[in-house]
Image: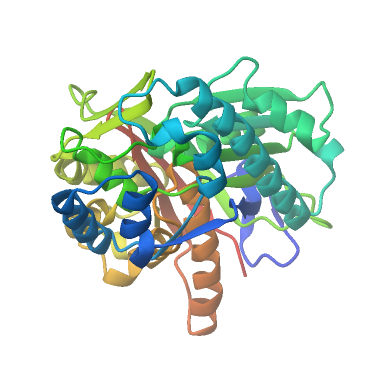
Length: 390
């Protein structure tokens, strides 16, 4: 394993040269949506009176398991841009005007929280990785984030656009590679998303839109990633041992997104949860092989899985025969924030840290685990990680 050092407050040895997550942070818009009030509010805001669609959305709101979400959309925005609630209106310009500003502000706020939790200074940050599927502009959000934080103009920036739900883990994979190949570097990973880019009035011709209304939320997340933590000042949370990315052949249309004059439109195939179930075991086994962990002993690991929806979590749990508590952090993130696309894995990891501290007092928590997400492609993103918290 190479030279190892003991980090202050950490009970496990940290592998020299391996990237670690040093801090987490999150931020949200001010508008909190309670799921129980969403249906009436959505149909009122879009001036729609279709009892059948309303009943369908009410059923979906119950099956998603979401209880609360944060959203950028509010009454003030709809008053300024009433055309956003008009079927077929050309509104991509207005949407991007709102989204570009909103995602930048949320990314700045999440990054500031993360940097405060880390304890380092802005001058210590050498790289930025920025992830979003909610904006489109040149220059990109990576520059506006760096400018908004007051980072040095020599900062090295990388953007990941339109990676969807797998974007958070994809960004973590890229940050890991940067940290491990640039000794002494500290990488700020920021993700930021808003559903305004795809907000539309209900339509019988677009039934999937109602799934999005019932499931998706807005927000931002941030991490600091670096290798060889400074023993006096940094507290590593997870070691990122091995990463993998894989697309499933001939599934590129199963998650389909198009940026049109009406904003972005998504369709998800009904068979998506089944495709994930059919392929998740082999993908996880290949990651576990990197350190010769016993395949099939999945319940000896911790699991940080992006909660694309309850059906996906249920299929992963079923295929891997996981104990119900293994996906507690994922289910709690979904319940509290909805599916916030690339951000959600950061919320899952935060809940996992809280959970691990609690469980350690009661007799231990798994050292090894997997961080997983599934996105357009269909693309699987995964990282084999070690929990380093005491």
